[in-house]
Image 1: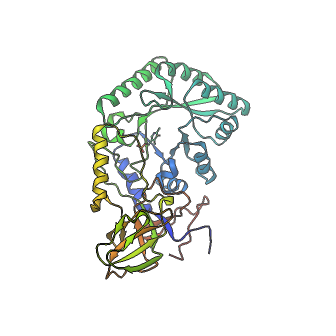
Image 2: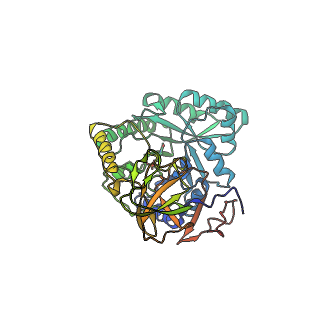
Image 3: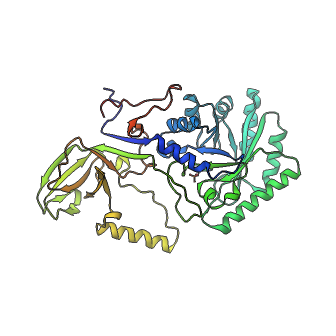
Length: 398
Ligand SMILES: *Cc1c(COP(=O)(O)O)cnc(C)c1O
């Protein structure tokens, strides 16, 4: 048995669900709009290389990631499609690696462009470049009024191919702000067209923008969330039939009967109201269990919502408390989640046993990349691709 693979916990990824989500996204695309599949953050937790392979087999020919390291991993696995890196690459050696591997680089400043040009000149190879414009997100990008000048330099340089220009929307559920960002971007693009700066791929739409503003597709869209099976947070005019490909599973490592009145866990935060079977799962907050992404509440209403959810969780209202799924039914997590373990209450007459499979509510983006991903089709371990060195997980034990 391969000890590097942990069979006590694993993430199941449904290949058919990924394909379904891709097909659903494609129904929204206008003719000739290219899909750039965003597979950053380990493909939103589903496995970078494997998800890219699934999508590539379905015809996706452009990928995007945040960091060069992720792009190199895709190349290493034999993915020959285009790959755009969103973040600036700030180190000369890495820029050269990107150019050699034909990875598309983002220019977010004059320095970025100088660094790319210097290194492509050194290698005597053309860099593929997209220019990122900041129209109101406040993250990366050249200001709109400097973009044309940099674009002209890239276009005139014999060391680069200016393939694209893009911007990123800050608040896609807000009509006014999104339209303002779009107007800024369009104004810039129109100015460049007048001045004969040709840009084949102009793009600004992520998942929520595609749903709410289909007229903003331009030449390409950058989609991650929808392919990973989730509707973005907020209200949208369009809805897709998405399937969540992801399930975090584990096996019970201990079950005992405990009498009513027993305390469960540190600080004795839960006391059994009735006799019960208490199971231990080998997952804890180290695996992402009971962790949430914390951000400053966006306003009073958001703050109240968060407080209300906590209150409902405190009152053990099932939908707001942590629950696991066992044979299609929900059971409550009890007590504080431990570093590497979790307690679950089952009815006293339950047949639950050590080794039984349980699905746990660990967010896909918080599930550690070191947890094995198992790719399944209709419940069977599925083959992703015979070539390209995909790693298969030995399922004989399961
Ligand atoms: C993450 C990201 C996307 C994808 O956004 P989704 O809403 O997940 O589809 C697109 N563009 C950029 C620049 C991103 O960082």
